[in-house]
Length: 251
Ligand SMILES: NC(=O)c1ccc[n+]([C@@H]2O[C@H](COP(=O)([O-])OP(=O)(O)OC[C@H]3O[C@@H](n4cnc5c(N)ncnc54)[C@H](O)[C@@H]3O)[C@@H](O)[C@H]2O)c1
Image (tube, rainbow, N blue to C red; front, top):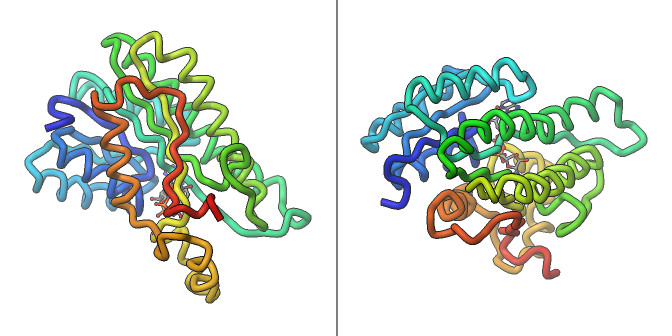
């Protein structure tokens, strides 16, 4: 299998894209640390991983806390001996007109979506560098300026994901020579709790008209790419931001 003898950490993995990525990495042979703000929900994912014949470890880790992030990495190394793969997946979104955004909205979003990725990457890169092999996969968004587009009501989210794109390039430059590839995945609209609001507000049909594929993405669409980026098959890819949006950005 592609990820035999690898150890992965996936943040925000109790549900949605993170959970699906954790299971997909396990299906390819990796042992997986499933971390999120609730350990109880993570344990359910670990039970599924164990059902696949791999080892899992459920950890409570708020990615905005340096202490909890460093503890997660310490416990991963204690349990599995090393960290090979980090999927920086934890993220939050909220919707508000720019003029109504509070300092708190801004800080919360930037802290989870951007600072969280920085804290996790810094903590794991120290371990990966020891083995001269690593994969850091940052979940960004097509809503990130730069490669993507801006949407109304999420200036704070868009800024955080733009920061993720910049961080990905900067880390790739410094870490690739140490054997650590760093890439970003930029999803379009993926069918998770995060897009519930689109369904509830009746905007889904309108949205699907703009997506050439004619459907929402599924978490598996993202997980398939994450497995590839985690494997040796992607050895020559670093510093890339890969859009996975059913063709949305072409419209
Ligand atoms: N669903 C989409 O359409 C979409 C599109 C583009 C990007 N993304 C990104 O994909 C990632 C996963 O999102 P999802 O769609 O699965 O949403 P989700 O809300 O189902 O999952 C996000 C997870 O992050 C966790 N989380 C939130 N704050 C955290 C914190 N401080 N510490 C640790 N974990 C925390 C949540 O508990 C949750 O399990 C996010 O980074 C999101 O921005 C999603």
